[in-house]
Length: 258
Image (spheres, rainbow, N blue to C red):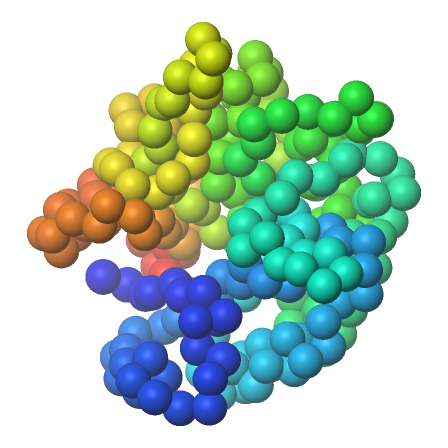
């Protein structure tokens, strides 16, 4: 195992076992912080206390990568505890760029922005999702976290072209790849793919991953599995599978480490 990724929101307490465990992991492995609570797409100002807590963790653990989602999660006095979709307009693009700038200035670090898994589209949206995603990073100077499972889920749900979506993402901006499993649910006769991180990576996503790294080289790759968690041996088998794909590329293996 080359490295571990955690949600920093789980470690923002002043002490206790979680921080102790994370310190022990950090002694032997590089870390990546994958935030879920910054709410970059909210129309409200960012939570300064949350940003300061995130900054303290960054300074304490010195992660190799820091990332956040292209989404929002809170309103005036409530939190959804989920990653909510954006309306893709120029107005919302300007807002999320301002928020990414604020986060990067606070942390003194460039962050990566992850593409969402989406289940609905807004009539008010004016910009294709992949264009909005890339443009947010370009305008803010952020990098991209390409979640290939999310691409497959979103494109399957909306009838988009997976190949066109991935081709729109400049590979030189991608600093990390996520892979995960998803479920297929029937909602009133409509088949919907749901990014639930509760099963092995499917064959179609592995194929997309192999094609991507064959064309662009190996990158730090994370297997996300945080529901219906199996025995460690099954998790490790997924990691080894990803490593086998990376080792088959013409790029040197050190490019896939933090």
